[in-house]
Image (tube, rainbow, N blue to C red; front, side, top):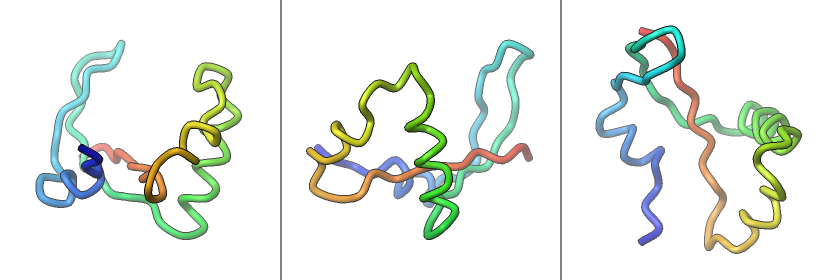
Length: 71
């Protein structure tokens, strides 16, 4: 199944995430356009993600970038 996390977040955008500083309430939104491209570039520069563009090329559609904002 190739479900979109961003699609699921649109239905239920509010969540809680665990961080080293504790649990934080967040709201999720899919980044689009120039914002998505800027964030995708930053993710690709992170050494822990490996060759993210190569992995994304195997998907049938563009990989969503989800932004979490503190509520």
